[in-house]
Structure formats: structure tokens, C-alpha cells
Image (cartoon, rainbow, N blue to C red; front, top):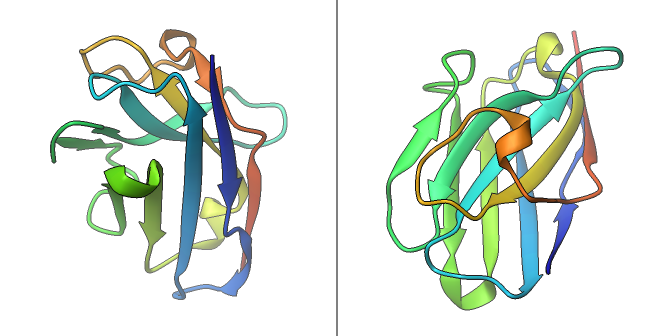
Length: 124
């Protein structure tokens, strides 16, 4: 089992920045992939970004490329999502997740463990 706890959400004006954190505990592995998703009410969970625990390889959705940066601190078992140039359409709940495979996936059903989510609100 892997437990995930997100933090760092909040309210920011358009054009501003927020940094989300996801602390992992339990049976983590250097082969796992950590991902960030977001989900608006009534919509499917949308892939945002992913990173491999053991390296620096990252993968981003086109909608956030160039604005968001995913990173990790292995010593702290924590993954971060730095969000810059935020837009009102970025408003939603953000979740971190663990994929136990070694291949990058963008579908929510490929991820095995989820955090509880953190709300991000961008005002116009």
C-alpha cells in the first residue's frame, strides 16, 4: 500500500503561481511513476504531468506544458507540481497518484493509488 497526501492548493489570481506537494509513504519504489491529475465536477480525471521516481524523466499534458513543472525529492518521498501563469480554466481539484508500472500512462485507470485531492482556484 502507498499513502499519498497532497497540500499546497489555494486561491490565486490569474497569472499567479502555486506549488503543490504530494508526500508518499508506505511501500514506495524507485520504479514507480508519480503523476498529477485534475478533475472538474462532472468530468473525467485529466492527466497533468508525471515523473519517474528514479530519474528525471517527465511527461506533461499539452495544456500545461511550459507552465507547470513536476519534480521530486527522493529523500523526502515528495513530488511537487509548480504551477505558473495560472489561468481560470486551471481551477479544479488536483490529485497525485502512483502508477506501479514502468511505462508512462495518462489514463487514470492505470494509476493504483490516489491522494485525497487539493483545491486550486484561479480568479480572473
